[in-house]
Amino acid sequence: RDAYAARLAEEASKFTLVHSELMAGINKILKFITYLMIPAGLLIIYNQLFSSGESLGPALSGMVAALVPMVPEGLVLMTSIAFAVGVVRLGQRQCLVQELPAIEGLARVDVVCADKTGTLTENGMRLAEIVPIDGADENTVRAALAAMAGDDPRPNASVAAIAEALPDDPGWGAATATAPFSSAKKWSGQSYGAHGNWLLGAPDVLLDPASDAARKAEEIGAQGLRVLLFAESDRPVEDEAAPGTVTPRALVVLEQRVRPDARDTLEYFAGQKVDVKIISGDNAVSVGAVASSLGLSNGDRPVDARTLPEDPDELAETVASATTFGRVRPDQKRAMVGALQSRGHTVAMTGDGVNDVLALKDADIGVAMGSGSPATRAVAQIVLLDNKFATLPHVVGEGRRVIGNIERVSNLFLTKTVYSVLLAFFVGVSGVLSQLFDFDPLPYPFLPRHVTIAAWFTIGIPAFLLSLAPNNERARSGFVPRVMRLAIPSGVIIGVATFVCYVLVYGGPEQTEQQKIQAGTSALITLIMIALWVLAVVARPYQLWKIVLLIGSVLGYVILFTVPFCREFFALDPSDLGYTTIAFVCGAVGVFLVEVSWWVTGRLHGEHRRLFAAPDDLLPGVH
Image (cartoon, rainbow, N blue to C red; front, side, top):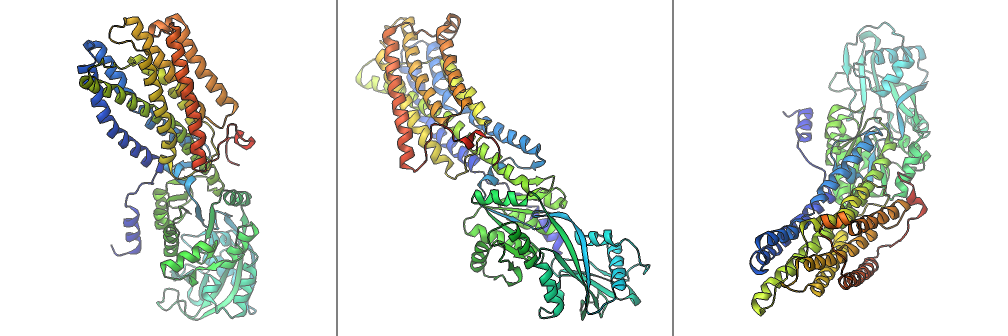
């Protein structure tokens, strides 16, 4: 149980979920709505059953019409659909999302930590050159390299490239001792009895930094090439004192191909104010050469992780200021993620090896490569099945679409909840006051069918379309306050305007059934007018398809209020011109107040308001 692998597995198996500001915000909103519904619901129940004076049937209908729209029943559904569609879209790009909120999480990330190999460069390598040191026999070096590469039971990318270039077996037989490569010691070795003890590893670990061979390796690495030292040891590789005295025999130069999409990906993140940190186990100079060739900021000033401070505050300062790190140990990767998070950053970590597991687990979003280890893929929230770092901008774009669209949809549903609670509260209070001051209480103005059609073209259909639309707005924190800034004023305006209209047209209990329907229709016209304008505000900035959506919503209500069958089925009667005029006047005042509220809140909170989309907004996807 004390073994490193066992402890790693135990810690990685602890179950955690991605924090979703959207989900947490919606839960907070639903909890708040529940607290509002209890007193408003009790008031409307009391009014409809005990104060309104209506028979049981109409009283129950009014009570249902008041209580049902308080629940934003479609909000969670629309959120789930938006996330699910995002998962499908990313799946088409060979990106597997293992937790729905991970789409949102990556859109909020401001630091991406990535490895050089497999991120900036292709996974595969090619043996470019073998440079003998101090007159070493090249044939012997090639034979020893071929033997080591051929006998390695778990060849990494470097050994695989050597084996591909040197396929001929020298006939030395099986190795008498083997020391596998590890990230801690940075070398591997094999002993062949009389044929010697051979090492393959990092020059800056195995060599004296002041030696000519070390300087030569540094010069080659500065060109962006991977350089390994091939050396001979004076003792078997399994010896506790290994590697012992190291005699350099050759520098093995491996060529890595820079990914053609690497520069575009780095430029995308730079344009989005997302810092990219290259964290690699390779030589720092080599990593810096590749990073600077791709234009990464401060890539030409790499940091050797062996010089990193242990103090958390000092480490956080160093990691925040630099962008390229070489010779990073697995435990340092995890410490660097924690250091960035301690400075308030939202961190995404990419990796493919078992040693990356804990860093992926600690990061806000873990991204694994499809070719990585099973453990890495298991703990990651996102798996890039095609191993392309360039897929991440598409994940960011999809996350923005989900976040922006859910915010729009939330505005519509919560506006309905606010005005429903307010109407129920006003009508309920009127019932209480009628007992105290001896006047006729107001019944609830709407039937359940009125509530249904009020939501059809102001929320239901538009919310579904808006939740799936392209949206490239930058992800921002503060979801709940932003939604409330529109939903509460708009809901209050709709609730007050609708109640005022109903008070003006309601003629008391002596009204005929037809006059009651006319009064309810007038209040419904006021509500729909303002609710349609709220939809028009939420849909901004306008594009052609949004304008068509708004026109379609208006036409839908025109049909409902003008076609005789619809009017009869939904109990609508706008035939009283006096009532209808009052309804339109109240609706126009409400529309004006919603528009003013939108501009004023934008000015107060420094939000940029636009009526029409900029040219770039017309192009869906990632730029």
